[in-house]
Length: 337
Ligand code: NAD
Image: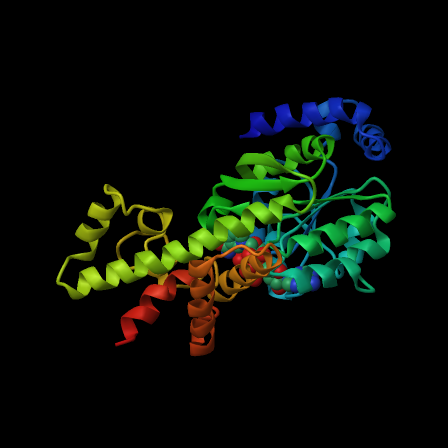
């Protein structure tokens, strides 16, 4: 991984000769950090939003040698990063003042708007030529709006939502779906390859979010399908481990059955085996299915199962499952008669 990051660093530094506004910024990196190309890219990086995903992603940047300046509205979220050497900033504006590359990993569109547009937000102090990578899953139209506002400040905003879950964030094997111009995408790859395995340019700004909400609509549906299936099989007297093994070598297999099985005890190290703690909350899945439904309405696309899955997760939120991992769909269905 370290060598991958080094290769990417060199590519960025070559690319900046044709990178327009960010050119100056990256040239500054060279002067700022010394003569070596690898060292030049190790200037501090800002990281905002240190929750289930962001904390792992930030730690992977630290592991690769990047000095971090971090911020989260929840003070406890920053303490672990502080212990690993990150500098703490009280506001997003303070982060933006001090760095020229920022990664944000926030729950939803309103949180992104707050972190970027509020009085103490990123855009209040962002420097010209700053590269901003937003890995939150949000409405594609919000991503486009924030990109336009960043552009007015001379900064570049890319939407780069991720797929893979907390274990993939921990192991730096996330998939990044990146919306932005090809040369901006190339510049972002250096950091993204330190946190992920697959980094894909999906097209212009906003298309990363489009790819992400399509993926999550499928995931949300598949998790309910897996939960229903496992619950039925168990009620028919089948051993859950044996049933999972059969599904995982049969045509019913999915990520929800083989990597993130919702039944406690079937897999180690997943939220279902930890009382559905951590992972991807039902509230966030409900948010993503809502984004998919908005997009489906705007494009007049029929998504009957996406709509039904959205309703089921909304009911779960009302019944106390909102902070539990979304695989608690199994527990919810199990408790229903
Ligand atoms: P989380 O709720 O665990 O973490 C979000 C963090 O952002 C929290 O620590 C919160 O305090 C902080 N925050 C909120 N508003 C802020 C603000 N204005 N300024 C600074 N910090 C702020 O969420 P998560 O599970 O890490 O997910 C983050 C994003 O990644 C979401 O958009 C989610 O949909 C997406 N995602 C999550 C997973 C997963 O498995 N958890 C997988 C893929 C994508």
